Amino acid sequence: MLFLALRWTLRIVGGLIGLAVVYLGITFGQVWWASRQDSSVTASAIIVMGAAQWNGVPSPVLKGRLDHAHALYERGEAPIIVVTGGKQAGDAVTQGYSGFRYLRALGVPESAIRVEVEGTNSFEELSASSVIVRDAGGSDTVLIVTDPYHALRVASIADELGLQASVSPTDAHSTFQELFRETVAVAIGRVIGYRRLASVT
Figure (tube, rainbow, N blue to C red):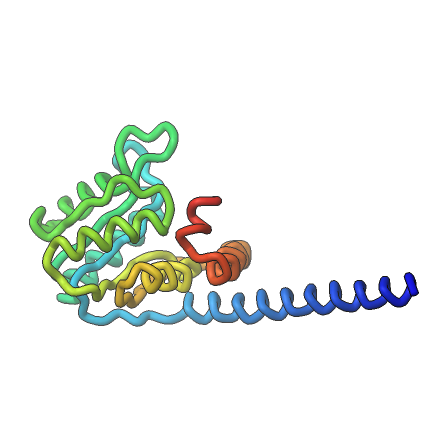
């Protein structure tokens, strides 16, 4: 009797592990596919996801996002750009302010830039940006700029926040490690919600 119970327990555990592997595999495929799509459309605002900066100088990752957002703005895809990101440990200025200065140097008018300076993760940045976009009098349509591996998660977060989001990734290369990390984040976020995921990570 004990042997039979053990055998069924092992079967159930094995089945659950198998389902988890399939779920992760499908999610990885979706993350990878989203990383290769550019769904840019005309929107109320372009939102640039934050990334590292050094004393006001954007890192190569942030610079790539800002350059891409600037190109979209110049094409007339949206009337305003929202730059996001707070301070990380040891930072003198916020990622959002660094982005603001960079875009101003490229010739974007101050009136066309909105700055979010509190967000420390993707959910916080998009949540605050959604308020900024709505306060600016636009619709809920936004065009999010980030790195390719990040595309599916930011689109999913935006959907949870009630935004009608399209994603226009930069041309940066996504490594397997980045894609796998995002796969885990998306897989968990779909189960517990991205707000809760942000609070536990």
